[in-house]
Length: 362
Figure 1: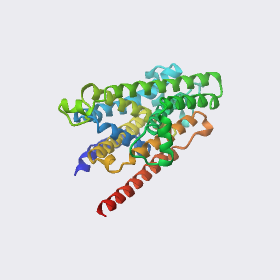
Figure 2: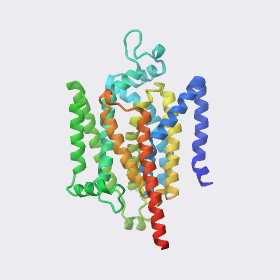
Figure 3: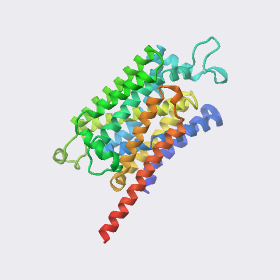
Figure 4: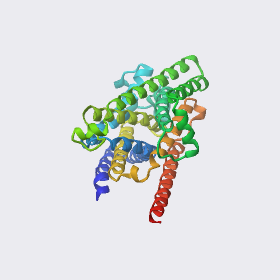
């Protein structure tokens, strides 16, 4: 029953989205919508786990805000408005005009119109280096801050232990991310203009992470403060809850970059992208997140968070390498990476629980 309550709304939304997709473009649009939804969910398992780790520190009010206001931002902000803003920022094309282009693509899937003007899909793909640099560096910082932090529970001890020791030097994450950005900007670009845009976008991704993460830590309540405020220990309320909510939305934005750009390999229709990636995919990711929180999954399977962060590290590398089209990784491979790491972490967690149970029984 608990699972039905959590996923019931997502199922209803899926039915409504499928009906809207069919009305928009018939059976072909319906198939594309399903493919996009599966793509989003498969790419976002690691996102759900990271979200759950943050969401369990938030009060019920802010969890509800994540499920309501957050889904509107995910659907209309990141999956519909964001691509239009990319076209506006990189090509100087007004968002309304970009939306008209998206709804009226060139015939026969061409990248240009008969007069030689670029299609909406071509404009988005041309902005991919900047998108990959920003999102790749943001996610790389998330991964590095995790592995360079000394944690009581370690999964891949042969590498996490030395990484934790190196992390004691301080600001190692920024140094490594900076080096990665310089290498990506100088080795994976083909012109001075492209190099400059990639380096600027990556620097903005680094700054965005430092600002959002810094503010999040500043407002993170201590157990004493939480109890005094009349909440459960560690539950973020007020400014702390708002900050974590914004942090979650920023994470969702970084995770969505890969899915949004990858969706254009399937369709350039903004309506189908918003319905498939945003409405259906994002709703299920949020339902999975809530399920993980309510079932205390991260507490019972302690390596899941580790697996998710390692998957994020690989995803960040894939995004940075994709700045050079020759090194672009197919979406099914990208999605499989997260599934493999999380499945491995789940398996290790189950084995750990069995060993602990056997030791306690003995």
